[in-house]
Length: 178
Image (tube, rainbow, N blue to C red; front, side, top):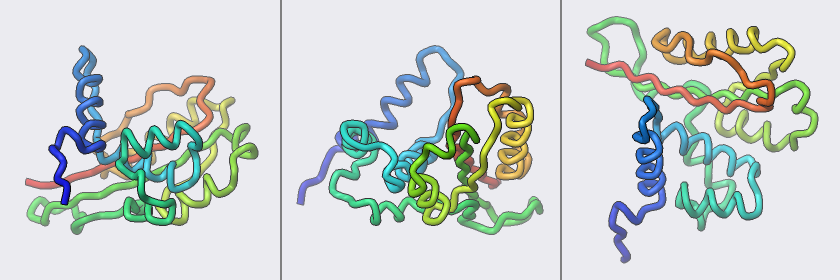
């Protein structure tokens, strides 16, 4: 049996690289779990291919020997809660995860259907489209979804959308504990 040092595990290397980027003077907060869930869902949906797919599998996710169908182990569900989620302060801790894929209505027709279907069916992503002609409406809809997914704790995450945006993959984590 081969035991790797933690620093040799690709997912740990991925996290260490993100920490280095995040600590470069900016006030960036990220969740390695969220990024891994989003990247795994992309791979499971046969999104990236060729060198990009190999780099994601090798460098980020340690999935070199896994096939697409085995990526369901990363299934977090549209809104999966690890524990009961209630507003009562005496309630037990809760941990909820939600995923969303939002695609420009101009770009939607050019996407392979399996790229949309697998994340929505297997990974329970909420799927919707947005109009690049209505950026304020899109910002409002995204912020409303994020607020709902985080029990109102994150209200105005997105300030604006770049006019060149064609897709957004969003993962939220909500933990309530004492």
